[in-house]
Amino acid sequence: MTAVTVLGLDPGSRNTGWGVVREQSGVLTFVDAGVIRVESLGDMDLRLGSIFESLAGLLAAHAPGEAAMEDVFVSKNPASALKLGQARGAAMAACAVAGVRVHAYAPTLVKKSLVGAGRAEKSQVAFMVAQVLGCRKILAADATDALAVAVCHLNQRRFKRLSGEP
Image 1: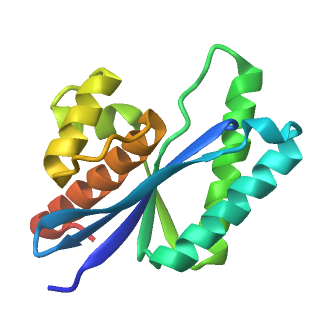
Image 2: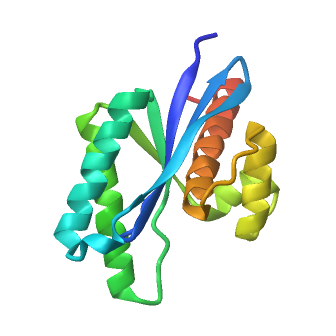
């Protein structure tokens, strides 16, 4: 079976987490992860441009076949939701330009696929990401969240294949 590499993304207007996971024959392997920090750039247009350019570089370096990110959740603060949507758009655009399809998952599904509970704490998700990927490296929360989305996508992909879904 051919290996598939997935770029998981946790976009934000201040920090965008990313994580790369490879699956071959049902075995998941940690490749790399990090955080694109753009808060210090000030204006939103500069932040979005930096997210786009940084992800374009990561896409070129890791050549993932697919990408995954969480769906936007509805926030109590409309301005925050708008900024999150803009960061998400910059990330999606970088993937589209690179020819990488983006798959979106509800935050509760991401947590449930790793921890077994859709309302799991971030620390529980981080622990399970480390267990599933055998990663002993200390990672920022945004990077762990991105890896969780990548693992969720690979789990969903495997389930669809096994159940005969397109």
